[in-house]
Image 1 (spheres, rainbow, N blue to C red):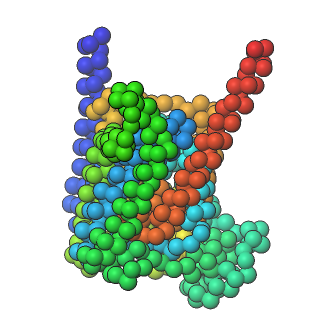
Image 2 (image 1 turned 135 degrees about the vertical axis):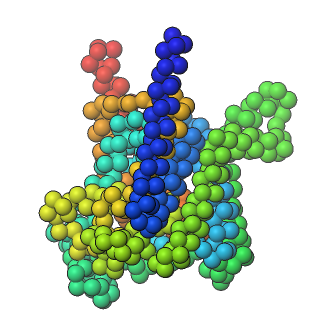
Image 3 (image 1 turned 180 degrees about the vertical axis):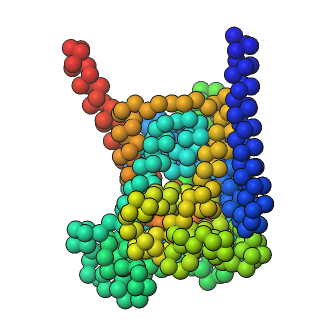
Length: 479
C-alpha cells in the first residue's frame, strides 16, 4: 500500500514539475521571439504565485461567509480580513513611491447592489471568482463550470441591448450621449453601456486619503488615510463584530468552566486566539500582499522601460492589432484581477463566431478582446490555475471531481449571478473588494457590505432549500 502511495505521489510531483517546465518554456520561448513578451510573462508568474497562495491558504470568500453564517466558524473570514490588512500595508508603500498602477472606482449605491448580487451568486456556486479558479486547478469540475458561467454571462451581459433599453432612465441616456464617445461606440444603445456612461461614470471617485484632502502618493495619505482610516479601523471593527457574534460565546463558556469567571482580559485573549487561528490563510495573505505590491512595481517599471501606458501599445508593435479597443488599449490593470480577462476570451470567441461585440463600452472602448494567446491578463488567470494545480499536486490534494447534475445547475446559476454582479460592480471579490479596500478605495467597502449581505441571504436560502428537500425525501420514503 505504501509503495502504491509513493508511486502515486511521484506521478503527481512529475506533473507539478511538468507544469512549471511548460510555463518556463513559454516565458523563455516568447521572450526569445520578442522582448516585449516579458511584459506578459510578468503577469504569468505573478498569476502562478497567486494560484499557489490561494490553494495553500484555501482562500475563498464563499467558503468564508458560508462557514460563518451556516456553521458559525469564523476562521476563513478572519483570515481574509488579516490578509486585506497585510496587503494594504504593502500597497501603501507602493503608493508612496508613486509607482502604483491602481485606479479607484466610482462610488455610489451601485457597488452595494452589485456586491449583493455577487454574494448570492458565490454562495449558490460554492466558490467565489478567485476561489473557483484555484479549485479548478485542484481538478474540481464544478469550479470550472462556475468560471465558464461567469465568463459567458459577462460577455453576453456587456453587450445586451434590445428590450433592455426600455429599462434605461432618460437621465442615463442623456448623460451617456453627452459623453461624446467615438462613433464606433454606440453609447445610446445597450443597457450596460448607458448604465456605465450615463450613471457610473458620473459618480465621485474617492479614496480615504482624498476625502481627508491628502494625496494618495504621500506617506500620510497612503498610510494614515488609506490604510489606518480606510482599512485597519474598519477591519478591527468587523473582526470585533465577528468575535462577539460568533466566537465569544464558546470562548467564555470554556473560560468560565476552567476559571469560574470570564473577564475583559479573557475577551482580549479570546479575540487574539480567533485571529491567530487563521495562520495558514494569514500567511497566504501576507505573500499575496507582498507579491500584489511587487506586481505593481514591476509592471510600472516595464511600462517606463518600453515607453507605454498600456499593453495594447506593445501588442500593436508586435503586429497583434486585432481586438484592441478604439483607444488602442486592452485590459491591463497592472495588479491582481479576476473575471474581466475571462469575459474577454469568451468575447473573442463570440466575435470570431460572427458576433458584433466591439461597439460596446466594455469591450470596444475600454478592454478590447485580444487573442487569448497574447492577452496579458489571460496569462495571469491560466497561470493561476497552474500554480494552484502545482501546489495541490505537491500536497496530494489534486483530484478530478465530476460535478453532479444538481451541483452543475447551482454552479451555472451562481456563476451567472457573479458575472452580472461583477459587471455592475466593475469587478469581483478580488477586483471590486480585496484590491480596492486595500488601496483605500471607498467603493471597496460598499461592494463588501453588499457581498456580505448577499452571502447571508444565499446561506439562508440554501438552509431553507436543504430542509425542504429533506422533508420531501422523508415524505417519499414514508418516514
